[in-house]
Amino acid sequence: MKRILLIFTLAIFSLPVFSQNNDLILGKWQNPSGEGRIEITKKGEKYYGKLYWLKEPNDEAGQPKKDIKNPDEAKRERLVQGLQILEGFTSNGKGIYENGTIYDPKSGKTYSCKMTIKGNDKLDIRGFVGISILGRTETWKRVK
Image 1 (cartoon, rainbow, N blue to C red):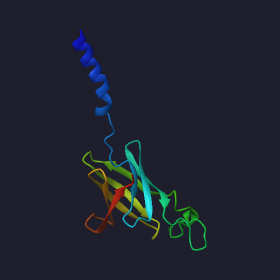
Image 2 (image 1 turned 90 degrees about the vertical axis):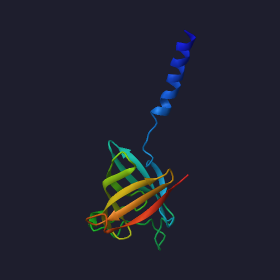
Image 3 (image 1 turned 120 degrees about the vertical axis):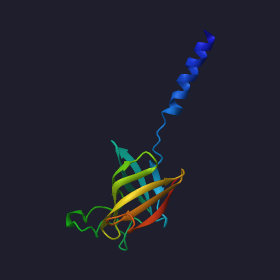
Image 4 (image 1 turned 30 degrees about the horizontal axis):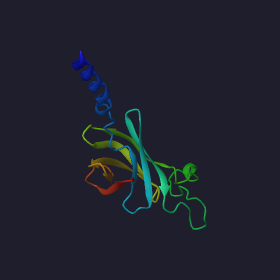
């Protein structure tokens, strides 16, 4: 009886270990220049990223930076800090997140994007037009 109780107790306490979230991509990341930090979250089966921190959140006039390069005039009054720049990614279950887009507020352009986890602390972000070969990769580091 003691053996059964011990096995049952071990099973109960080990459940949280096995049910932990395997979404290593979730959390806060910093771009290579250190200018911005993005928080990646999950809604349903899709992943999104919001620009939650800017090294320089204000423009030359001391006002909060706005999305002035956006091709949609109606969106040019949005603040850059707090902007969702990663949208609609799906996981292939092997540390690769694809079929999403990344928005660059500096240029006002949106690119197709693929993200790949490298260990626990690095995230390769590849933005491209058309096919992945025609793109550029940045490595973001996890914010601790």
